[in-house]
Image 1 (cartoon, rainbow over the protein chains, first blue to last red):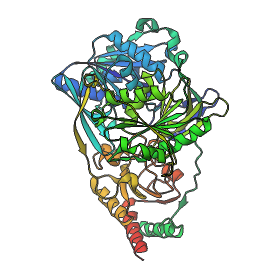
Image 2 (cartoon, helix red, strand yellow):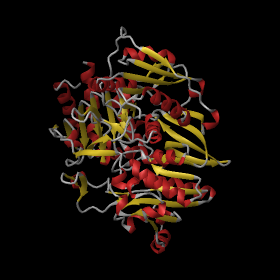
Image 3 (cartoon, each protein chain N blue to C red):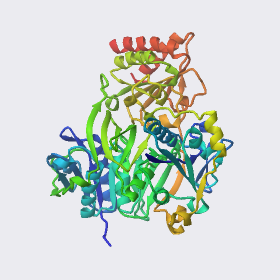
Length: 265
Length: 332
């Protein structure tokens, strides 16, 4: 089983909301004093791949695209147990949209050659776009299933559970294929000391646009097909009326009375 | 080059009727079509959906395209994508609107890439720019911390809409429109997935998405037993129980009741958030609620910035008293 997992370096979505600011001049989000992290949805994808490797063996290659990729961040899949790390790191890749990003990742996966299963997070926690995974599958002509919570490899096929509004579907799909996963897959494992040591020693393979055979005009900002006109934070009203009481029990009862008074109850 | 005109809404159906998201899509689509000065087309894909074409017309469609075939009984991406591609190529709309549902999120990006376009998923607002005449796609980004407005350079401009974000179309049985049947022509060999089982994780009582009151618990609830207390309040309010992500990840509550960017979107009249800190990712799922009430031990919790009424303190002490007072008030 050859597996490729696409992971992204993002600003930390778990950081306090107060640290999140938008730079109006560049239309970009900035997070002062908080280091970037590997996208959590991507970590679930790494975990899903490692579980398949645990069950039936195989090789897991992590693939990241971006600029200023911090090695201690993008090496996390290696420290969790992935075998290889490939980085598409070049200013040409910067400022892309789902279209140009998926094109670059699909070209890189093609160059990797043998693959049976590609795994992505359901979306990245910064753009929340949710298009790169299915987009890669379309570009490579593969079947895809989004929002998968369990993957079993049975007789050369993937048997996956896809989350639906009221439960899940069990879907059988031919390989090679692509799946996107989310938190339903279960908590990602912590890197072990051994894994961290191995990741430290391992140097990622870095590919430039020429290595994946794509023209710069198709990549990053130049290859965009969608434009972001505006990035903003919705204004909150922030008028919370606090209800009190001499005891917590009294406060609880007072809350009910307050809701009745406000005609909410 | 094809000239793209008007708006097409992909209408999901289930149990022999159009889904609520179809009415929301047609409501949003009608306005966009009018602003563009074009037609509103509905497209229905499935087995036995032909009979629903009039329903789509009553909800504002000028034309309803139906692709009715036993091969489309289950949602299978390859088959649905082929059918939808056919309808979109025939109608050549400028804008395609779909729902951000289990099907929409799976299908919309594939359709976009197949047509050499991009999509914007989970839009909370769609409008036509009066100057450029392009579709302005507003959607949450950074886990709900911010919103962004996108435009696409290519046609069709494809967007999925968040559930409950758009005003549904009003049913008008007197509306007339044209029904166009398209043959599916699905090649079974080209369908690479098969649905071999469907599991419904039944939740007792009122469906979370339909409830007018929601009692939701967060990390601070601490156990599955804690959620039983929330159920008591929900019963008193004739509402449903929801949860933020940590209780679902910890197995205290089923995944199907997770509310947030990665869970369900709810918009009840009353939302009672118990021991929920109010992360952006959670608030994304309940920002449409009319009145948010928060109970949390941390006076600095973000939830109090979103709530209309709040109590600071230990929910274990506050909630039973609140529940019994609510019962008393509703009984009297």
